[in-house]
Length: 302
Image (tube, rainbow, N blue to C red; front, side):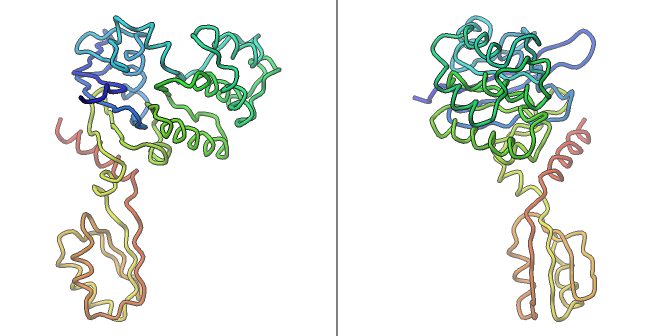
C-alpha cells in the first residue's frame, strides 16, 4: 500500500472575484520530504497554503493533508501540523514567552521540552514584549511555535524573512533534521537559493499554475553549465566546440575559451581529445537561470 501523502491536491482551484488565485494545481508531497514551493510574490503560493489549512475554501478541485480532507478535517489537520504564515503576527503586548505559551495552548500535548531546545538554539528573546522586537527576533518566535509540538508536517511561508545568515543556516539544519526523523516540510519561498539548500523536490508556480515539479538535481540538468577552458590551441578548440549542438555562448579571451554546455558533458570531452588542455573549470548550472527560463517558457506557451 502506498503511504499516505503529506500533501495531495487534485486540480485545486481558488478563484477570486478581483485578482488572481490558483488554477488546477495538482501536486503530491510524500511523507519524509522537504518540498519547496517556489514562485515570486503574487504567484499563488500563499493562496495554496491557506487552502490546505482551510483558511480559504477551494472553488474547484480538492486537497488533503496527512490523508485528511482539507475542509472536513481542518481542525485535526491544524492540530497535527505546524504553520508559520508569511506575516507572523501575535498581540504585541505579549512577551515572547507568553506568546509561545498562548500558541501552545491551542494544540494538544506538552511542547515545553522541544520549545526549550529551540529557544536555546535560535537565541529567542522571551522576556520582552513582541512589539519591541526586531523583525528577525519576531520571526524566531514564529519558527519555534511552528516546530515546538514536533508536528508531522510543518508548513512554512517565507520562513527566513528577516533572519540573518547564521540563523538561516541553523534553520536549514533544523528542517533537514525534522525530515530525517520521518516528518515532512512544505516550504514556500520566492528565493531559489533557500529552496535548493534544503528541498528534495521543487514545485514552481507561476500566475496560479504549476509550471513544473522536479528534483533540484533535475532542474540543474535543465540548465547551462558554465565552462572555462585553458588550452594550448585556442582556435582548434573553438572550431571543434563550435560544431557541438549542446555548446553555446562561446567566447575567446586570450588563452581561455568560455562557453556554456546544456546536458551531457561527454561530447565536449570527446571534442577536446588530442588537444593540450591546461585547465578546465565547470560551474554547475545556475538555478536562477533555470527558473527564469521556465518562466519565459511558460509565457511563450500562453
